[in-house]
Image 1 (spheres, helix red, strand yellow):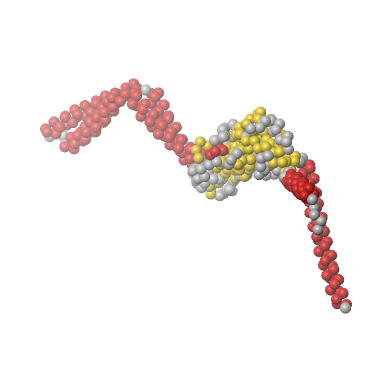
Image 2 (cartoon, rainbow, N blue to C red):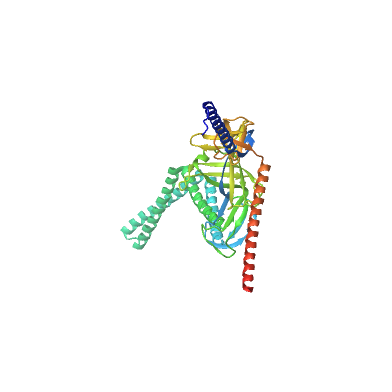
Length: 461
């Protein structure tokens, strides 16, 4: 064996070491390049934060009611004599709607009216005649009765003496005694009437006459009121929406026979949670939307109940539409949107661009110039279904990630893609999926055809 010099052996070892180092560097460089290639790049869409007006709205469902509604019911039970309106008739306040049978009530009212007029005439005579004339007449009557009594007393005394002497029969004396008793009674009555007139005076006489007059007047008014109850009149302006009875039917007291609604103003009644109701106040603008109507009906908040509904612990809110659309009718279920507050010059981003986590709170992702997504903590103000107000955290014009940002970590490599590009990419993927499905379907068809041919050849053999 040939012996290798020591210098050549050392050179050989050094060459092997250098080759190993070079190979290691190449492997490391390859791994590093491969790591860079594997770093994810996420496609996103952005929208610049803008300065615009934004409103806080409260949306819910409600039921439409007329602002005024009258359920007309009679106070008496009687047969319907005549209806003067139909369903859909427009009526005014005080207009006669129906008449009930009232012949007996009319007769009673006329009799009471006669009694009242008589009492009124007596009162006028009492006031017109005056107390002095009555007292004078009573004095004359009293004097006449006293004179008759005195004369009869003298006759009685004379006949009594004659009877004792036996000059006249007893029956003449008894007749004089009866006449004296009658004269005494008439005299006492006349004297008592004169004393009463002098004691009571004019004021008491007037009170007595006035009391009689007012008593008959009250009876007449009661009879007239009963008669008026048979004439059914409209309490409000509006439209007749219900008339369940017909002429000849029995109208029962306190049971509805007509319904009148004022449709010039309609309200949407809604029940909303306490927290949302606290943001509303009377006068806030609102909109009422109903199915089949393109444009919402303009309205305003007319009532925020000061108390909670005991059954649902919600707050009842009324939204009034002063010029409602003809398609809006009482009883409909509608969508109600109320504007609680408005910011005129605010930094606004799409509501879908605002995220929330336990660690960061509210935040948005901003596309940086370094090609990465940067997490920005923000303070959110007004928020509605489309947009959100950013009070602090970003500036107007910052490119906020609106699509592809959900769950995206901070400092992630991103690629900004327009909506048209994403639509085109989705279209290509759909075409690939359709083509793959078609190829798979063709392959299955070919396989099935081959199997059929094989079976056919086997049968021939």
